[in-house]
Structure formats: C-alpha cells, structure tokens
Image 1 (cartoon, one colour):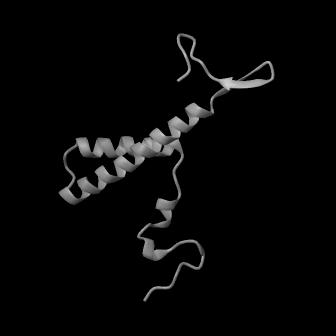
Image 2 (tube, rainbow, N blue to C red):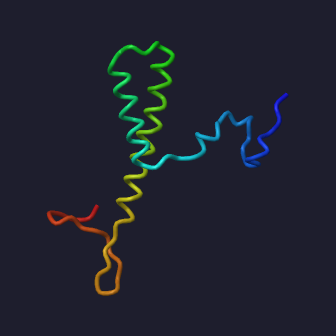
Length: 95
C-alpha cells in the first residue's frame, strides 16, 4: 500500500489526478504543447492508445486555452474619467 505524498498534503492519490494535472499551465506553454500534439497526430505514426491519449490531452489543453482567452477578454477594461468600462474595439460594440 502506498503512502500519501508527504510533500503535498492536499494531493489525494485516490482521485486519479496527478500533481501535474492539478497545476494549470500558462497560456503560452499550453498552446505550445497543443501545437506539438497536433504535429505528432498529423504525422500519423502514433499507436492507437497514444493517439487517443494525445487527443484527450489536446482537448483539455484547447479548453484551457479557450477559458484563459475568455477570462482575459473579460478582464480588459479601460479607465475613462476615473471609471472602468469594458473595452470596445474601434469598429464595433463590446460583447
């Protein structure tokens, strides 16, 4: 029987999540990893199990990147006359 990780008391080995899965990568790192996965899959040389695992990981990374972009979009605000307002692109309305 394995012992709980003494370095990380919050890590629950029974959860099935590794410590690396608990730490979300920065946008740039996630995007770079996603691009590498796509290149590997487009090469068509991955065995079936590895291709499925790569697809799952790519899906997670894509959702992560989309979530980070959405969060950043919502955080973009402009200070105008002492008041914060949403950013409005030059050619249109704020969403």
